[in-house]
Image: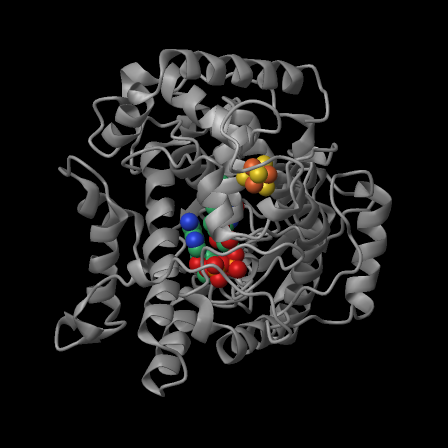
Length: 508
Ligand SMILES: Cc1cc2nc3c(=O)[nH]c(=O)nc-3n(C[C@H](O)[C@H](O)[C@H](O)COP(=O)(O)OP(=O)(O)OC[C@H]3O[C@@H](n4cnc5c(N)ncnc54)[C@H](O)[C@@H]3O)c2cc1C
Ligand code: SF4
């Protein structure tokens, strides 16, 4: 009897596990654009558009490969509105009683599939280097989960940048070389963009009519929406940007959102690129002498290290992970995250480009929007929803551990050794923002003081019990304690006044 084979919007890989186990001559592939997925957070219109356009093209590709595909469009009057609803509808149409699915990347959907009253078989998503069992085996019995040690395992396993069992160049990690600011010049690489074709145009019109009010600019739209285009983005990155990726990885420049980053996360996450293939191509660029080792190692570490590691954390921690709030932060997400006016240049830049591109690079997410949310004490679940909504690459398995764990320390330091907080100094060192800011980064208190300078100490002071014994934070507390009591009082008072204005919805 016919089996239904579910392919979700982030499972657009011809070799996805469920398809590998299905029978092309008999089974029916089910793909559906549903309101429940498009609306559970107010996704950026570009994010909805890339997923829908890539789904439509993938369905056509599967048909071309001989699969029978039952595809439901968002505006189809029969649309049941949710993935379980669509499965049941297709089951009643075909008489199918069994469903084959690749395990979704989100607990919410896993639970929804488990509740479908049919025989559902869920098979592991094998588009990753480490399976769930691999991660468990690695993590079990360890007192601390550190990405660096997991990453070394992944290097050994894949053989990437390995020479006779040892790391190429003699070191596992070249991060130390990768902390340089960037210079703005005419030679910065330009991202590869694609003119929307008829399929993309149709999706853009649909998204405009249904989700036009969401935060984010839909047009101009130039993202890749199929495997060949995603491949071209990767090649363009390797050719033009990879050689400087390492040196400028943490740098930020006004009006230059992409710098030397690859812009491939959305494509990796929906299945248009495969992580191992991406890393092998980067490795080949080092072998041929096109890109230096510090750049290629840094890039590969993000993919076989961080990307795999955070996925392991998400599935190990279970469905409740998204509710963690160990620092007890409860401030509402300030309106500036949704584009309300702010005089803080770093935040206005990060938010403006997020609105335009559904993209911000890692340091903008971690050390600008994340850092501000953390030192201002914003409710981590509201930040989690924001990150999940506004970035084109945001899927819960990768977004939640990055936001709640790495950026907000809301899991109490499951894998981060200390909170990623900084005063304005760090932002000033890594960017050109402060020179153009209304606030003065050099001013620590008083008129025009950079809010990051005030909130940084406010955070340390209010969490003294938790962090003062942390060996990596001792120096911060010693500096704070050496300040004149009167100066400390002034800083705390000014921080409080700033937070009150933020809470009152004033433009800060
Ligand atoms: C608060 C916060 C939220 C984030 N949310 C997401 C998210 O929803 N989806 C997402 O894919 N990444 C997320 N990241 C990680 C990272 O910021 C993005 O992967 C990266 O900015 C994507 O841009 P890029 O493709 O140009 O990456 P590059 O800088 O060119 O890096 C190459 C690739 O490495 C991978 N990578 C890099 N850093 C990480 C990381 N910390 N975790 C997982 N993979 C990583 C990505 O696949 C990326 O495409 C988040 C980081 C933070 C601090
Ligand atoms: S001065 Fe402070 S608020 Fe302004 S850009 Fe620099 S770090 Fe951001």
